[in-house]
Length: 265
Ligand code: ADP
Image (tube, rainbow, N blue to C red):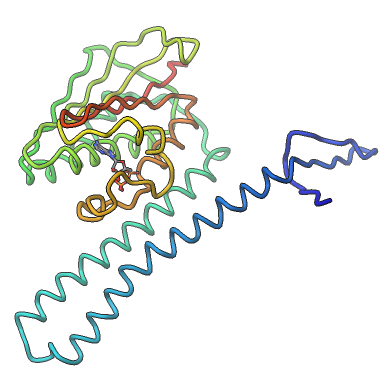
């Protein structure tokens, strides 16, 4: 029999304060499988752009050496692939930081309207460049939740960037902050922050899987718009850490709403 020494469901006291924890071996095997899948995914995601880069370096050394037009085009592709790898590494770091942060950073009062304004100021110029209007709707009163401001900003940024990527150029994106109200799913008062787009929407059977690492509805499309497949995994992690809920409502061809529901206290 294999006994896995991990924090598990069952704990056996061993005398003098020592304690042996173990859990069902199948659970440990599943965790191992998830880790192996994750490493395989990361490797694959990095290998694809690396192979492309190597190919272009060879072409630039050889056949395209004296062809200025080809050189320019290849350098453009190399720049894009390098950017993609940089984004992937940065998302991976975010994800591991969120996982580690769980016990480290204390929660502090976060003013959600201020947070929205801050994020819109940062993403606004890119949106404008793509002809996308960011419309904010928020109550007059200040709404404050206990949270990690840096992480909540990341949640909103990821949701708005997705709404821009999958909403499509020229389609407005709405950011709506609700009034505090009783939220049965939180067993208490909560506040809803919703990002709405008018893009392609998501088929119902994909919705439960969106927050899995590297899950994409359309891999090709996600790559094209510069996605890494990690954005919503990061969002879900942060929302869980805040004891909140993530809700996705979507209709094919009409658009999607991603709502984060955060407890008020
Ligand atoms: P990515 O980096 O690929 O965008 P995410 O984890 O942020 O990864 O999202 C996972 C997948 O969910 C995306 O690849 C896309 O297929 C789908 N998705 C996310 N947001 C939206 C949206 N607003 N509209 C339509 N599809 C979306």
